[in-house]
Length: 89
Image 1 (spheres, helix red, strand yellow):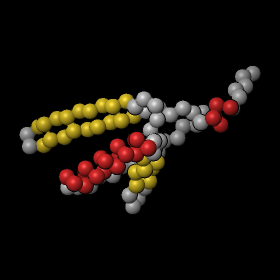
Image 2 (cartoon, one colour):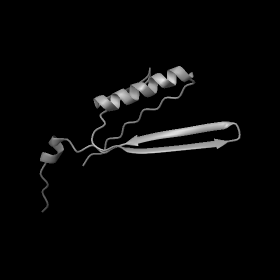
Image 3 (spheres, helix red, strand yellow):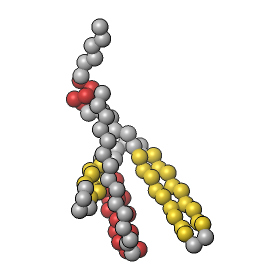
């Protein structure tokens, strides 16, 4: 079984309106079943399906505030991989 790992990472300063637009695009993508993340350097397409695992955390420390939203899910192996036969001798 082959393991494929793709990463996409982007960091930038944004104003509140831009963040709202990005979050709206993410929720719209979840509803449609396809989210595309891209910038000048990279691109990744994800297809959320089934039950999604949601984790929200928030911290306040001195003058720094942070919250994280993590959404994850597992994708079934594609049918091509399921059709492969295992031979043990």
